[in-house]
Image (cartoon, rainbow, N blue to C red; front, side, top):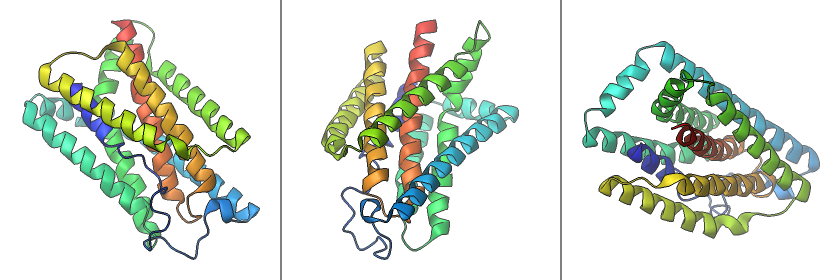
Length: 259
């Protein structure tokens, strides 16, 4: 799972969101920033964003069911058994797709391109999770399945953090520098562990859960303040990426505790 961890983290750096790009001419000037929109426009944007997030999560679950109902999951595991080059090829593909999908989702000229970005990222996330879910399912055969517990914990944390932002209306953009630093530090440790063949332990997983929670606060704050009202696909993608990072490490912790 070392290579998976590297690709998982690299796809999240730098943090998703339009904080540094709001003044870019690539964004549609006809759509107001959420903080400057009318209450109806703001409510419509937030509702649409979370509906898209829900749709991405449902699509992710449906894709996982399809992979495990077909030979796809087995083929993926066989491919990765080919060696380090297979890992590197997959890691490079996932990292590249993450950046392409984010750029598409931020498109101001084409709604189709925005949805394609969100869909592409969801597809590759579902492929990324195949080995992790395969191991979790194998562990579940020895007792109670850990997948439902991981989902419940993830949704509870996400709901609680979202509530904090919506209730306090605090601007969490100040977390950006800390998230970049923490993300690169975590990525560096993951690369070193992969090269030298040692495990990072439970503390690392707990630290990454904290990092994912920071992303959720940061991205939720952007949804309320900094996206333009026609960027719901990009906002949903950023939230979806943060939720998947949180789910990954919650599941990892539960799996490690069962060993």
